[in-house]
Length: 194
Length: 263
Image (cartoon, rainbow over all chains, first blue to last red; front, side, top):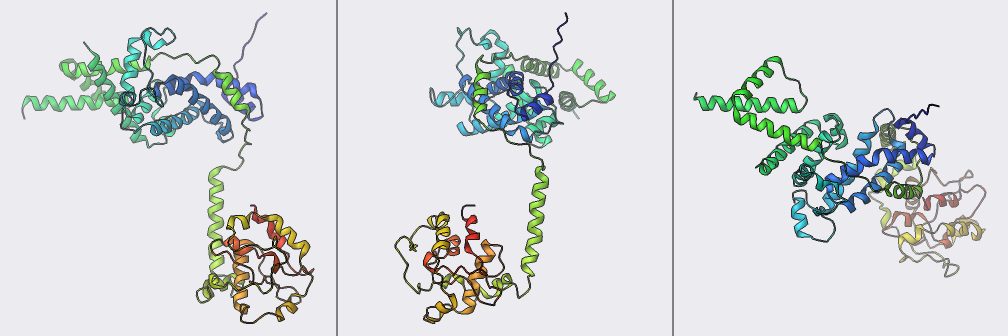
């Protein structure tokens, strides 16, 4: 006996969700929550906040699903909602020019700050990779716009046009942000170099 | 030109080309050749290119943090409390365009309304007869304390009393309005133009009714003896209960406007 497992497309799941099929939306959540969760974590570097915000993002996705243009890819649309939510949160909690490190120093234990990365916490896989930790540290000190543009480009593999749409920003601005973000990242890596 | 200056220019050109390549902009054959040759000869640019590659490779290989197991359940629990909105059939740009079109059509219509239209008088005569100065005294006392709408009552309270409008219809005095008008002190009563202005302002702002004159020529315009809320146009709209016009069969009922109160 052959078991054929056909994965339903995003558009099918969206259509079924719009018709009230809860399981279809659950499948969408299962499919996209790792992307949204990791994107938000890389932006905020705070686990608790990431969990709360991921929930909020998917509630927004669900409520706004009737506005989604089914002809377009779903991932940039979801990331746009996550992007808006994240930038709003970051702006709310700190000035855009204040680095997250500075925020952590100023408000220990209050509001939110990037997670301290305890060396002995086995639940956090980031400790296992020194390189990942370096990257997170480097992007955590960037302007949130640079950080977001870099993440969308190099971890989510969005095109420049998709990033411009996702961040609701002109294409040339996105190019500038990514270029500057790359330079910052390179400088930070140079600092780490022996 | 010194050799150093020339080298610096080459380095800058190489940097621009490296950025182009990173931005997925394809280089021409000559650009590729230049870049390859320069990188082979310039250790500084070579190191810079290598650092950038390392940094971006690290960024691309960021490990995925596992999603908490119960997160999907928590999301679904939240979603169950949210109503799913129906699909929007009219694209938003069309809706906006329709709204703009409606405004564009409405403005010239209002500006070029015929003089006989109640709207036409507003633009010219309100300057000499401002509505705000018309605050005549009630010509007869309210029937009860409940019926009396205090002028000091907040405008919101006035606007949020649609049931009172229904009550007005039930307890409206079945008297002939023109007869009642005869007993008024002419000094207390507004002039014809003032009454017309009030009716026009009311109809213009709140109702689709062009006039309140019945077929037999009687003026059933609401009389302005009621207290007028100075600050709230909605307050001006609704007369107090004691000044209810008679509910003749050919009179336009104010109850029709009641639905707008809570809108």
